[in-house]
Length: 312
Length: 260
Ligand SMILES: Nc1ncnc2c1ncn2[C@@H]1O[C@H](COP(=O)(O)OP(=O)(O)O)[C@@H](O)[C@H]1O
Ligand SMILES: [Mg+2]
Image (cartoon, rainbow over all chains, first blue to last red):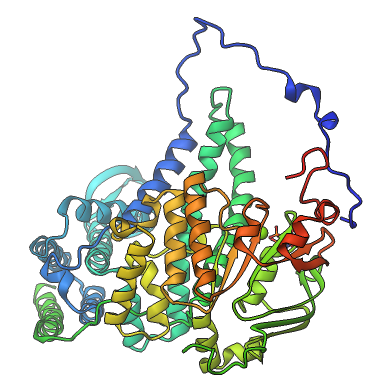
C-alpha cells in the first residue's frame, strides 16, 4: 500500500505447480455423464425463467388492451380488486375468473402462459394457509370426505371448510389474474409513469422501480454464480452437504454483490437525471376507449357485488 | 444549454482541492487530491487497481461526495445540497455524463429503446425530440437492430454500446469514462477509441480512467497518475508521463521486466 514499496512480482515468485502442464486427457476413460445437481437445476432454471417472464415482451401496438392508457388500466384494476376482495360466493368468483380469462384472450394475451402463471403462483400463496381450514378440526360443519374418527365422531373435510378454502383460492386467483392482465399488457416504464400520474408518492414509485431492478441484478447474479461454480466443479455434484455449504456461502456473496451493483444501478440512473419520476417515450392520451374501460370496470364491480349478494 | 456562453474560457470545468474520500469511514479511496480540468481537455486517470479512479469519477459525476476537501463544477460547489436544487441538478446532469465500467449497471430497462431514451426523458426533452436523438445515436453506434431487445439478450460489447448510447444521447459537455475498453474485443476497442477521439475533437471535455497505456497518447492530452496509497503521484501532459517509466513503475502500472 505504501508508495513504490511492493515490487512487482517477477516470474520467480510463480509457484511451481502453476507452470506444470496437466496430464493429457486419458483416452477411453469413461466418466459418467455429469448430471446437474438439484440445486443447480432449480435455482438456475428458476432464475432464468423468472428473468424472461419479467422481461415479457410487450408489443404496444398489438392488442386493444395494450393500447389502453395505463392510468385507465390502473383505475379499473383497483376497482375490480376491491370488488373481488368483497365477494363472498365462490360461484361469483368462478364466473369472474372466466370473464377475466375471456378478456385476456380477446386482448391477445398469450393464453397458456397467462393461465399457467396464475396457477403457479396461487398455490404458493394459499396452500399453507388454506389446507388446514378444510378440516373439520379447524372448520366444524358437515363432513363430506371422512378421513378418521375421533372419540367416535367422524372427522375429515367439511363442506364449510372446502367452501371457505375455495373462496380464498379463487379470490387470490382472480386478483393475481387481474394484476397479470395489466402488467402483461403494459410496459413497465409506462406503468410506473401511470402510478406517478395517479398521485402515488414519488418515493413509493422509486422503491418499486428499484426493487424491480434489484431483483434483476439478483437473478443475473444467481445465474452467473451457478455458471462459475459449474465451470469449477470437477467432481460430480454430491447433492447434499456440499450443496448446502455452497448455498450458505453463495447467499452472502450474492447479497453483497447485488447490493453493490444495485447501488451503481441507482447511481447510473441519478447520473442521467433520475429524481423519482418516470416518463414514457410515447405520449399517452386519454381517449374515449380509456374512459369506457374505467366506466366498464366500475360497472362490472357493481354488478359483481350485486350478483354476489343474490347468490349468497 | 451550452456552457460556453456562461463560462469564461479560463474557468475550469472542475476544480478539485484537497479531496479525500473514505468508504464507510475506514477504507481510504482518495487522499489529498487537487487538480483542475479545463474545458475541452482530455484527461487520463492512471493508476493500479484500487487506487481510487472509479471513486474519483463518481465524485466528478456528483454521485458521491468528498469526505473532506472541495469540488467545484462549472464554477459552482458540487455538493449534495447544491444538487438537491432542481435547476442545478438538471443543468449538471445534462452536462456531465458517466459511462460506468460495468455495463450491467447502466442497461436495465425492459428494452434497449427505453434504456437509451431514459436520460432524455428525465431531462424533460419532448418525446418527439427524444425519439429523434434516439434514432441518431443508434445509427452512430451501429446498434439500430438491437432496439427492441431486452438487456439480457445482449453480448458484453453490445451492452457497452447501449450504455454509451444512453449517455451520448443526452449530449453531455463532459464525459467521464471508467475503463471504457476493459473486456471488449480488439475490434470494438478500436472502434470505441476512435469514437472517444472524435468526441474529444468535437470539443467535449473527457476524463477517462484506464490502464491501457497503448492508447493513452491518442486519447488524452494530460494524465493524472494515482499511487496505491490513493494520492496523486503525477499530473503532467500525457507524452511526458509516458516518457517517465519511473513514475509509472511507482504507481505499479508497469512491470520492470516488461515496460509496456
Ligand atoms: N463500496 C466500497 N466499499 C468499501 N471500499 C470500497 C468500495 N469501493 C471501492 N472501495 C475501495 O476504495 C479503493 C478505491 O477503489 P476504486 O475507486 O474502485 O479504485 P479503481 O477504480 O482505481 O480500481 C479500493 O481500495 C477499494 O477497495
Ligand atoms: Mg475502477
